[in-house]
Amino acid sequence: MACVNPDGTLTPSALTVLKAVQQAPQKAEVLAEAVGLPLFRVRSSLRELREAGLLSETDGMYAITPQGEEALKKQS
Image 1 (cartoon, rainbow, N blue to C red):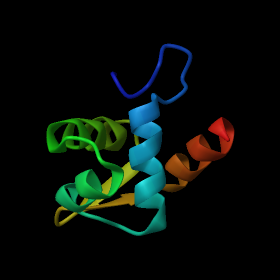
Image 2 (image 1 turned 120 degrees about the vertical axis):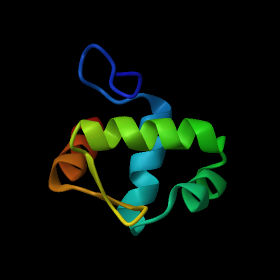
Image 3 (image 1 turned 90 degrees about the vertical axis):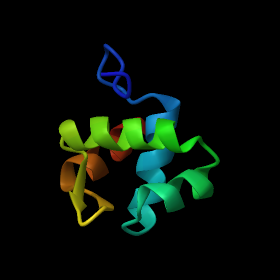
Image 4 (image 1 turned 135 degrees about the vertical axis):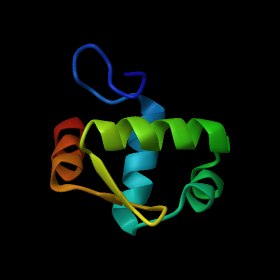
């Protein structure tokens, strides 16, 4: 996965997206604007973070999971 490094840590863009979603569930377009990354990169990160179990998605809104919270704690 491009968002997760071989050592299990998150890439800088994945961390940025995960931290932004931690504040409140958001849509991809809102996140892209908030974090200043291209929409295609944010969508790719959201997909990969969801597949890794770090985010959940409901009706286009992305929210951090307990596993995602734990991943952020480990990288702080």
